[in-house]
Length: 184
Length: 89
Image 1 (cartoon, helix red, strand yellow):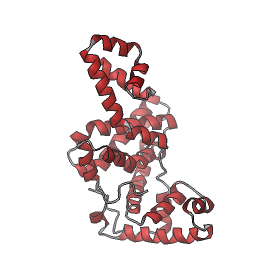
Image 2 (cartoon, rainbow over the protein chains, first blue to last red):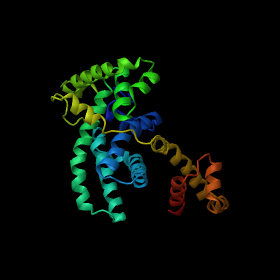
Image 3 (spheres, rainbow over the protein chains, first blue to last red):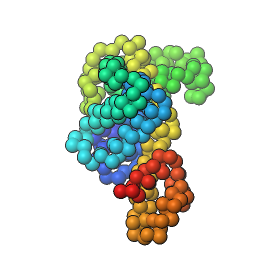
Image 4 (cartoon, rainbow over the protein chains, first blue to last red):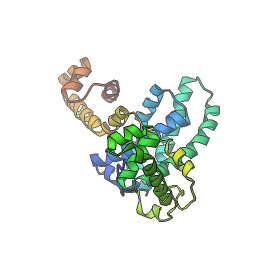
């Protein structure tokens, strides 16, 4: 977690454009879950198709980042690249009617966008909170595993998760969040 | 862009549900995407050498997998396809 807390999207893009390899790693890390979710949750691509789309999206991002007019707009740009690549993949496979899948995906994409907002807000929390919420909710780890990995008594995990969710809720409801965090 | 969700009211259950939507991508996929600049730079060097010297080009084309490996590039199917594409253009 906290791959690039405090670094705006626009800063990341500018650094990538300047050839900063670490910035590219952070950019991939920041958007990897987002792209993955659009492929597998939004468009329900097979693992093999999802992998191809995932790599194509980051390859195009790498190739075309110099052409991006607004550095802060990388997120909708990547979303659009991914959506188009998924549709192309579905068209090529001809297994699923594309229009039908586009309708289904449209519902999921809004939720995936909101999920990314939350993921990014998570980066603003103390690292321990980000870690515990990520392990429990996105990596589906048990209290026992989390306790072992983080060296915490398993009996305290539930209350920690609850407290961290409250902090996350407060962060999401803070109108100042936009100004002090990640997005450009 | 932050898409305007901040400052809104959230309930905890909804937050938890949305959090669970963004599962990590397989680590190998992420590593491959992060490795792209190094891969492209390695292929750029190889293609440049092949363009300057017909003998090198012939060797590269004859055994692309080996040429990539010798250039320090893991000859994955994706790397091979990219190198082939670059050599053809």
